[in-house]
Length: 250
Image (tube, one colour):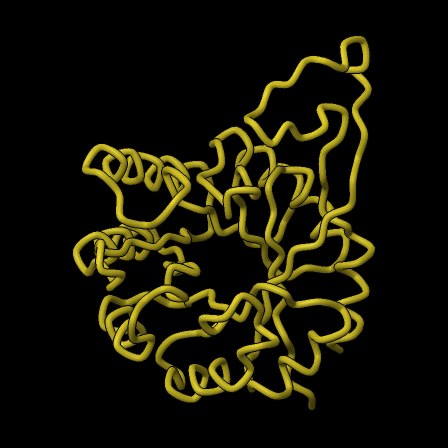
């Protein structure tokens, strides 16, 4: 019997979660602000996603963009968010806390892992692992702290450029922690990544554009920052694409 490859989809809204489930995803990671790499989603978004989808939802706990070494008040906010997300039905928490030198913050990471475990949910470390100075040392710390899974691109911009590292991570981890490759996983390379690295799960993100004409009366107005993204469109998970990846992995 062929090994089943669990497919996790990176989502930025409740509708994303619904589309991911319809495409055949096994699990989702729920965020806000995907443009910034994913920040903490609202409790309302999580509740709506839980009401309309039946697959596990791992909720991001990340209080701001730009690094993973947070101020005491930012960390306090992260703790409040962690408890609120679990109470709202999150099936796990995904987070990452580093010191200024890029090493894993044992105290903060351990506390979040305990909060998740005490609720009977999963504790997942995100791609902060990709900027640590020594990934083996970092993985051992996460194992010691009871983290169940780590999302990683193998410390490269794209998983496909780090296949050997991902394979080494899988072998180093053994049964002690799950390795979830993510970043640059596509329909074309998903099966090869799984086969080459020996991983049993993959993390993908694939959106298609949607249009909202409610801002069409005044094209000179922008609500964002200096990048000025179009105000009449947004992205949503491409459920059809997810389905094709699911088929490719069978």
